[in-house]
Structures are given as C-alpha cells and as structure tokens.
Amino acid sequence: MRSILSALVLLGLSAAPALADPDEDFGTRYRGTVETREGDVLTLRLRAGGTAAIRMNDTTRLLTAAPATVRDIKPESYVSALSLPECGTARRAEAVTIHAPDLRGWFSGHRSWDTMPDAALTGGWIGDLSGDDPRRVVLNYEGGTKTVTVAADTKATQITRGEKALLTAGAEVTAFVAPDEAGKPVAEIIAVGRRGAVPSL
Image 1 (cartoon, rainbow, N blue to C red):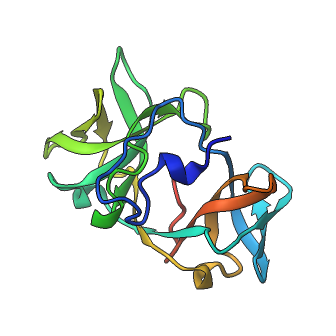
Image 2 (spheres, helix red, strand yellow):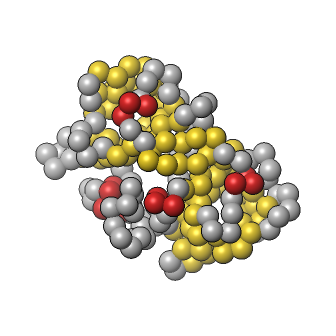
Image 3 (cartoon, rainbow, N blue to C red):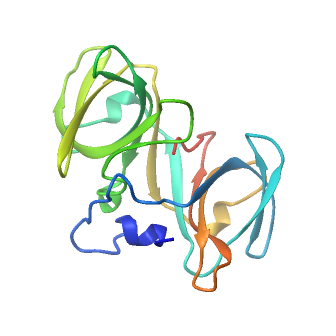
C-alpha cells in the first residue's frame, strides 16, 4: 500500500501542493471516541461498535478540528465537502471542512467516501460562492470541478495543525491507519475534535 502521506499535501511537507488521484488508497479509517492513551497506543470506542487499539509513532501527524460555520467559507478558502447526491448531477453537503492556509491542497479531487452509501469527499479551492441559503459552492481541483449546495445549518469544522496532547479521554477522532515500512499498522494521520467538534472526514 502506498503511504497515505505520499498522497496528501499535509502540514506543509511540500512547497507546492500535490494533488491526490481519486483512486489513491488512503488506508483504513477508524472513527470513534478516545477511551485511553498509554504512550503511543490509543484505544478508541468506535462509532460502528467495539474498540480498536491504534498505534502511533514519531511520524504520526495530528490535526485539530474546531467548530466553524458555513459563513466561515470565504472566496479564498480551501474546503473539503462531504456530500450526497441530490437531483441530477447536483450534490448536497452533509459536512464541510475548512482548511487552514498551510493545509490547503489536502484531499484535492473528488472520490467516494466511506461515511455512508453514495457519499463522496471533494477537496478543492473555491471557484464560485453564492451568499444565499443554501450557498452554492463550486470547488475547483486539478482535472475537474464540482458544485455542492451547503445549507446554513450544515456541520462545519476548521482544521489546523494539532498535537498528541489533545488525545485525551472523550475526544472524538478519525484515524487514518496504514502499514509502516515493517508492515505493521500505524496511524499516519489523526484528526481530533476540540470544543465539542467531531471531525467529519
């Protein structure tokens, strides 16, 4: 499996954003609530049921997801929209993630996502943005464009750089896990919610 981090522009690792192929493998995603953390082992109570022990290492990257609003989307924003089909080719956003300036380029493109049937994740720069409710948001990425409608009450978060100290009991997380060089599963990326936020990735 190709490393997740080789497919993402994350935490300023590249001077120019590389754009992920829609068929890129982003590893296995674990979503849940932190039960315990002992050193570099994180135990999650999974939303799907059961628990999972997630191993971290020195290269694990942390993101923080904080509450935001749809009005925080600006013409210069870079956004990931988790959406479902509407009528025709239109899509309706179920959640939007607004990326900090140094995280722009992450998950660029349009790909199916595993949060629910027919869900897709689209990452791109704002090409057009209406002020109405619902807002019409056009996302541009290399090789394509997608338009999503975003209602005023759509769940919104903003992601920035994070740190392992945020992984405390009760925190909501999404962990992206893939084999390391030795073939053992390790979390390459962990997004952790703050102030009641739940990462929507």
